[in-house]
Image (cartoon, rainbow, N blue to C red):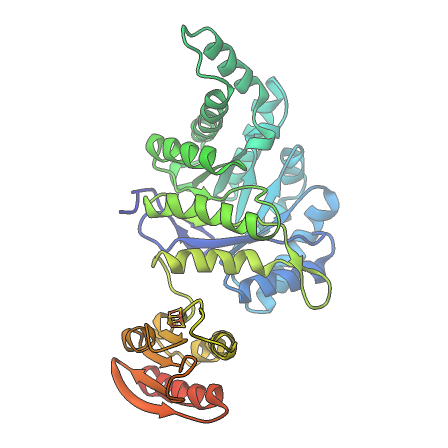
Length: 405
Ligand code: SF4
């Protein structure tokens, strides 16, 4: 069951309560380079990012933001634009009201808004801008830039206990307290509770789960989930998936971001869309949201001597991904829930193919060289000969058009 929260409106996108769990991403372009930033945001939005964050680190960035927003609008992109501020956000937001106005949300990291008395003043200045422009704020605590004074205080307290619980416990407590105390201060400075989203990201899966469980139990602000600095390749994907899945399955989390190190795309640049696809797949695997038809395919074994079924499974998945854009444009409602099966032999093939909306059961080694096709649990055709993929895709396309068109 989803945790009950306030609803926070970011631009036109409601976050929290029973609204869909939103996918976020962050541009890695130089924000001052307007054409590149606009182009990347466009790609991220096309990949299904519903909110996009940009770094605002200096005057040049702050000046570029209104133009980025204007160009996005001109291209029909209404995804909320979020500004990420560190160290000098209080100065930039005050000096650049056009930037403050163009942004749909500000991300403030309470660990690096200043030191001592300055911290409170700087934090207050940013919150006052948010109040003036009626903008929501994400108070985004990060394990790598945690409020050191708070952490020291909690470690000291822990050391004085008859049985100290150790620095890990103090770290997790500091993460939660930093977020909650900052939210309290933001409310004191005039920000309404329904303009606050919290996050407390760290890079260890178990710590993250514990921190978010505590955070979820201690407030009713919507939570932005993400394992920070998850790293490159498979380990980063697995760690992010593990962390987010545990929490989402417990009903914790209202907007998500996967922070994996991007791999290079065909043109040699970083492929930022991967993190958006990962968010989609996590939400889809948990049946929280559906974005694109899914393919059930077996892993293959000694019963399949060729790689034919692997190739067909990949081609079917690629076809679905590519056609989904068009089906979406044509308004094929519900097509994203379609289940397609491509199976390797008679052992589980017919069963899985019948269970899917539409499925193909290929012949294993030594089996009758025919491939039955099932639609809605009924045998509708048997494919033979070459070009099995083309034959199956033709049946699949007809099925989609008749059912969803
Ligand atoms: S369906 Fe057949 S080919 Fe696929 S894994 Fe099972 S036994 Fe092997």
